[in-house]
Length: 249
Image (cartoon, rainbow, N blue to C red; front, side, top):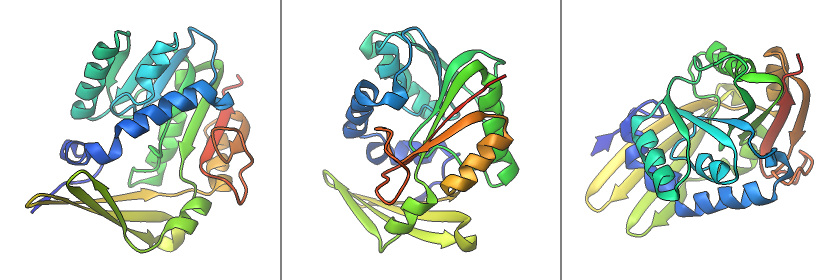
């Protein structure tokens, strides 16, 4: 039996890659960029895909004519993103960096943080610091789009273990609420033939009100919250928590 150390461990991203970054997820990103009013940017916009992973959004953004930079801490994920970029024949700048530290001042028109890639640092101050780097990275008038599973949505879905099968591989995911809904722990067991790999992720979860307050504290204005990429309201029918905000100064 093998065990990985969670989101900062490259082995985790390698072992669980097929479940985290399926071709279905890549296709979903293409569709969202083609249809979402929240992801419609002027051609040539300078876009930072922060925590870009395998380039799920990075590559199609480049195909749509944007000047894209993908930032991630995982060498394994960046290697996959570079290969996907080369296969697509587009140009993307990739940078290995900690999301708390990467903040080229005013370099971007758009910062994206997608698929619940926020809240994973143990110290709440580090998560707030990550928002501040997003703010600093934007040019005045630039837009942040932050997408995650809101606390209100997770409350509907923290149920008995989830089982996902992909080919002959089987993933069992068990979620546990921690600290009165401040955090969530997700225990993953991957069965691949006779090999069993376990991983545990713990991250902070946010309601729309909590996240909006944090984003405003980081300096952003014109903060809007939506219940999906179609810009639906964040209400009982919400599918995601998608926050859009502007660096006004």
